[in-house]
Length: 113
Image (cartoon, rainbow, N blue to C red; front, side, top):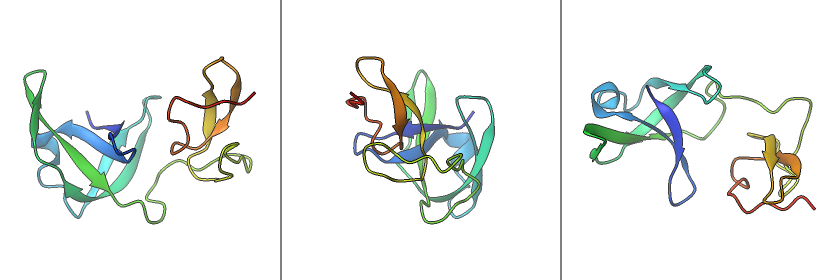
């Protein structure tokens, strides 16, 4: 299964078995979301394969220009940190207070108070 991961640099990538992603560079890949739904994104490059839990895994770098089937924010919601409308979702700060944030700002240190 191919899923999303956030790199140490804060960039969203697709993560999955090298055998599934090795021929995907320049093409479309189907990524499974936490909800179980799938989305399609364009792969612009692959990282160096590495071993994880006995399997050869790889990061697939995604084209973040334009919408390639990803989710859109609903109801005109904006990130409460930066005002972006891309990738806005319900998030919780360290105190458990709910609010809306984009994936870029949702780094685990949010404060909606």
